[in-house]
Image (cartoon, rainbow, N blue to C red; front, side, top):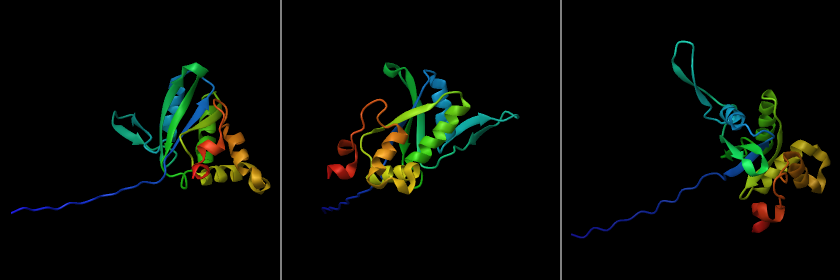
Length: 164
């Protein structure tokens, strides 16, 4: 008897945005504290009775760690946004700005690693510019998110739809 069978399985996930927020400090412990506070999984803590428990993070669909960028003398909160429609880039940026302020530092800009859907930048641009943006909605997002702080953000090379 010869049996032959096969299966093909195809899976997909929602588009992931690799996104980093710059902090004007070299102290990576601050970046890590902010990452633990904002990421969905939060962090572990030990309560007054010595029992470990998880403290959930502020933002759903966000994974984050703190990293050093010695060449720029800064640190970053390095993030993966696993559902930008539910947790937008500007919400992440503004949340990190507020957390940074609590630690006496500033979120000075950000960067996209790889590609970004145009819709994600349109949402951010609309948030920052309101209905006054017109054709400059992408530019509003770029400016307010500080996307060119470390390296020039080139929409023609970074926005998925511009490459199709």
